Image (cartoon, rainbow, N blue to C red; front, side, top):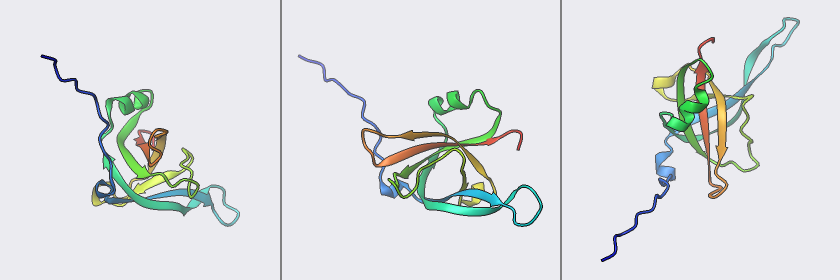
Length: 126
């Protein structure tokens, strides 16, 4: 009698899990003679699945002082928007209202090409 073999299968992400609206934005230079940046310019918005960081994500954050972190998965916008760590994210959920998230890590899924996983964090010095 042979034993059944079990192979690991990746969890399936689908549109039903992507319920939380998120906005990707950057800051524009302030108008006038004063230096600095102030005005928020929204670059891209979509729905995402948000969850707590995995052990792999926590290892990436290990070298930085972070107050809070989340991981999100979005549909790959292809050429409509390229995710950059120079941009910020706002999660449109009451539990995260008013938090400006920094993009720490972007993982493209080259085998599936449908989704992008993004690690977000709020640093301790902000």
